[in-house]
Structures are given as C-alpha cells and as structure tokens.
Length: 124
Image (cartoon, rainbow, N blue to C red; front, side, top):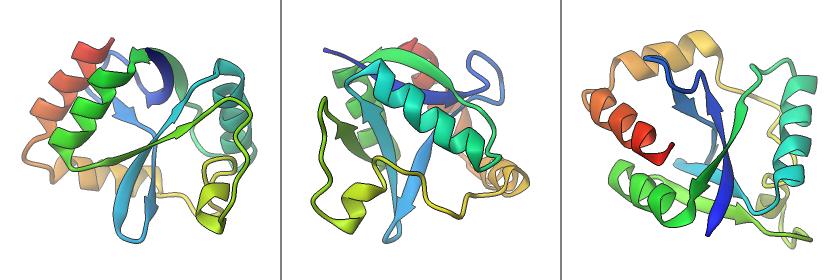
C-alpha cells in the first residue's frame, strides 16, 4: 500500500522526515490521501514552517524505518475524524515547531544519522 509522507530536503545530505513530538515520543505522520497531505503542508506554511515535499512511499517500508529509529507512526486515513485532542494533531500541526537551527543541532548529534539517511533513501 502506498501512503504519503512529508520530507524536507529530499535526496540531499540534509534530508529529514516531518514528525511531531507527543508525550516524549516522535511520531511520523502518514497520509492515505495526497489531498490531506497537501492540506497539512498548507497549514505548516501558514505557520512559517519550512515547506516539506510530499512523497509517496510504501507503508511497510516506512513502518520498518520508524521501527528501526524508535519512532511511532500514525496514519491519517481517508475521511479521518479526530476523537481525542491527540487525534487533532493529525489534522492540524502544533502551534510550536522545532526551530530549524535546533533541528540541525539535534541532527548533528545523532550518531546514527547516516543509517537513517540511507534508510530514507531506500524508501524513495
């Protein structure tokens, strides 16, 4: 099954995947419908967040990548209706975003960055 994820700087040394932090866990958002991914990107842009690229990937590959990185996954299905406050984060980005310079610092401190980058490249 193909799903859509949001990538920053795809196919570069500075590639990253969009995620949210929730209760100390990193959650990678996946979208069943491209239109939902496009709407979410529009909301990120409205918050002056860097604009990600929407990429189609195999669901099992992204789940495997997230398992290796100890990330959780959440999928926004077609006609998704939030039932909790946490579910709302799947439709609307949080008000506070990780600053790009902090993202860079975090990325630079990660000993497994090359492995993560290689795994992301395999998804494309």
